Every structure is written in C-alpha cells, then in structure tokens.
Length: 346
Image 1 (cartoon, helix red, strand yellow):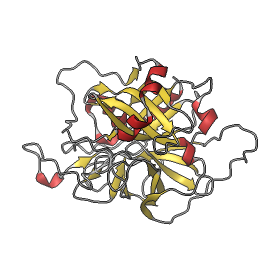
Image 2 (tube, rainbow, N blue to C red):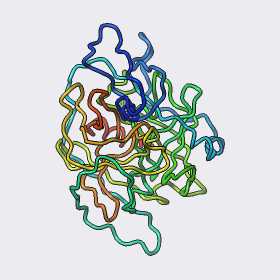
Image 3 (cartoon, helix red, strand yellow):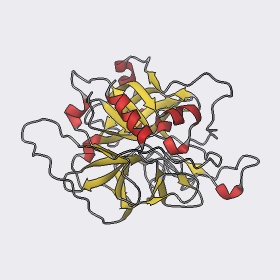
Image 4 (tube, rainbow, N blue to C red):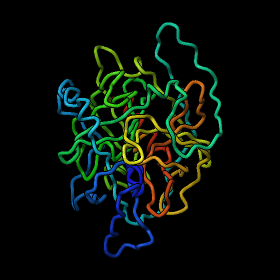
C-alpha cells in the first residue's frame, strides 16, 4: 500500500502527494502498500481497446526465478499507488455467501485440520510469531514495474489447480501495463526462499481494476507454474476463502511491509474488528500500521492462531494520508469470487 503499499496512505517519511487540480484537498492521498515515489495516475488512455483481464507471462519460468537473486529481493522497492479521484459509491455486487476451506499439504505426520476459531486480541502491527500454516502460505511478491524491481505481498489459497495466489490488483497490473518477471516467494525471510520462487504463468485482475483501476476492486491473482514437478499448495498448503461475508468482522491482516519502520524481512500482522470505510470506498478498514510492501497481503476471517489457518476475505490495499495507522482492503464480493474461479480453472 502506499500509506503502506497500495496498501496505503503516505507513511513514515513519504511525502504527501499534491492533489490534482480540481480535486478537493480534503481527499488527501491514498497510498498503496509500497513506496515508489513516482506519481501514478489510475486511469488508462482514452479510447483504448477493451482491456484484457489476464496476462500470460512471456518470460521463461527459469529465467524469472533466476532473475530474483537474494540481493534483488532485498532491494526491491515497495509499490506505491496514488489516490484516485472521488468515485461514485456504487455498491459492490453481492450474492449468497461462499466459503472455501483451507487445505494443508498431504505430507506424513501432519495433523488433521481443526475447526476454525477466531481470537479477538487487537494488534495494530507487529511480527507474527505464532507459526502455523500462514508462515508458508503468505509470502512476498516480486516483479518488474517501469524498469524497476518492486515488491508486494500475496497468499496461496485452496484451488482446483493447486497453483493460485491471491494479491492486490495493483500488484499484477498498473497504468495499463502488466508487471513482468512476476514471482511468488512463500515464507520469504531476509532474501531467503525456503519454499522456492514460483514464477507466474498467468496473472489476472478484476474487470474493474483492469479497466479503470477502481479502488473498490483492487484484487489480483496469479497462476504459478509447477516447481520441480510439484504444485504450489501441495508444497505450502492453501488458505480458505470467504466471499460476500459482510462487514464489521474480526480479521487478521498479514503482509511483508518494507518501508520504515519495517524492512521487508519478516511477516507482520494486524488484528481487530473491521469497519466499513466511511469515506470514499466500500472497503473494509482495520487499525494497522503496516507500510509499503504489504499490499496484496491476506486478510482473514475465522482465523485460528494455533494453526495459522483462516478464510481469506480481503487484501491489503490502501490507506488515507489523513487517517494514519488504518489499512483498507476491498470487499470480496461477486467480482472477487469470479476472479478466483477464473484463476483456479486456468
């Protein structure tokens, strides 16, 4: 976010952006979970052809993985996102709730998955020391954007193809261009890739993000290629998902913020009861001080601290400059559900 990474508002040491002429100063700035300092305008060229909602990688998989050395991963710049102009508050389409259960790798000696039970202790931001599945399913996302190496966060989820990663829309495409050299590194730690670097064979986003970078639909996904003959969730497991589950929920948010006071080396989390954005979006809001680089990291309902499993219901997306230490994430309605179904069937 930009506060944090698209995850956010201008944060710690990041200067506020000057509003475009004609915009209202009271809007302040939305920032994504990253910290690129270039001003990013969230609309594509007028009269452009109908945008495609997915992109197949043209980079050979081994080339993409080899590109991301430990040094490049450490130096990748968190992606930053400028605030959009005031948008019409059209309700995010919803239908009946849908829940997808988490899965664990089928390896010897693993216990059966227990019933999920949330805990409600509020946490505005700190290192995750609880262990469990989230330390393997959550990871950093690395890619090339406008010739620069950049980073976000992401999460492996239960899927039919066992190869689906959910992240933020701006972490797969921005300003009409799909990111290149895209890889997912689950369980990342200080330049290390304990479960491998998984290049994207295909990246996707919601139609609304692809067409106009609508902040309400900042959801992306990637289908990663097999690694050493194995599929992603057979190696690290997959979190569950929940769509159309409503607002004002107990949630846990995870990510790899890389802007001060964080450095991208550790998995950070926040927890508490969410609210509905009272301002310019239909997103969930959560008290959280994660910074740039956390964009795309998962938000869970029904999260069990003992097992590190939950139901992913949003991603780190943005923050308002004038509302510090608050993260916002898109509502997982029908469009997020359709994106997930498209990705898992790819």
